[in-house]
Image (cartoon, rainbow, N blue to C red):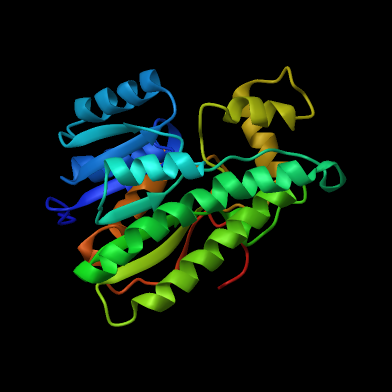
Amino acid sequence: MDLKLNDKTALVTGSTAGIGLEIARALAVEGAKVFVTGRAQDRLDAAVADIRASGGEKIEGVLADAATADGAAAILEAVPAVDILVNNLGIYEMKAFVDISDEDWLHLFEVNVMSGVRLSRGYFPGMLERDWGRVIFISSESGLAIPGEMVHYGMTKSAQLAVARGMAQQTKGTGVTVNSVLPGPTRAAAIADFLKSVSSNPDASPEEHEAEFFTKHRSSSLLQRMIEPQEIASLVAYVASPLSAATNGASLKAEGGLVTTIA
């Protein structure tokens, strides 16, 4: 399917690995000019080279920390306008509620929420003026089903849904859309350590750790395995395209059927 992205410019935050890298790859392979962001030059260069090797010819890196106000300002200066903004940058940690300090709450909010708010605030007016644009927040099923072992993370993901829906309300009658995509547990470089940390048998194999995680901690999942980053990227690429014009203000679940509610 031609997603009609050849004349579009996209920026994806947190895009040197994992879901962000695959989103950037999917958009670039579809013909968009894509900017990836990262804090380390070597990882940024590696991501750009990796995407080019996949056939994404129009790909550039922006060295900046999107989690900070200064970093967001640097990104906006380097790339003054985009057609597609994917707010993917995010972090998580497991911590008992009573052990989550004020600093922990504020840090996760700063990285997961304010990174997207600042860049959206910078790019959204231009999209409305040009009468076309896509803003996509990569939230999480944890924004709907708050995990008891990381309440502060779930809070930030719920906040992203609120921001996205509030922005969408301002697009009425335009060609701009604002949506959220909600992945479930997704395979990433650090996931093996995470699964091991919650396993009853740290010496078991990675496959056994994964199986136990879904049996004990995510039993409602219909997929019963980690989602591959490419599976999230495919949905995001469609939502970023002109073909998705009728999807606006939506929270699109891609969590393997983990959330049991209909809405």
